Length: 115
Image (cartoon, rainbow, N blue to C red):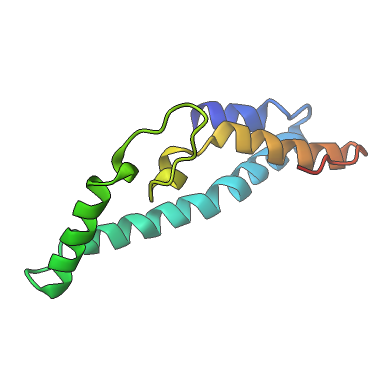
């Protein structure tokens, strides 16, 4: 949980808001956690193909990725087009704060800002 859950809980000013903050935490994290779990399961299957045409095609695709700019670490400000950028490049705390601002501003009668 760490920093992400602290961002959620720091918005709570009452006991009722603690429950609300934890619901927001789950609403933010669960879809991404499910997506990551599914991607992990698919990756596990893909990386354990038996020797076959499918396995050789996978190996060729992996070699192409390694041999291209996709395997390079982008410099600050450059767009990262690596297939796993959604995993490694995600700012969980920043995203949580945007969603928490939206939820808690609405509750306090302040119109949420549009990105």
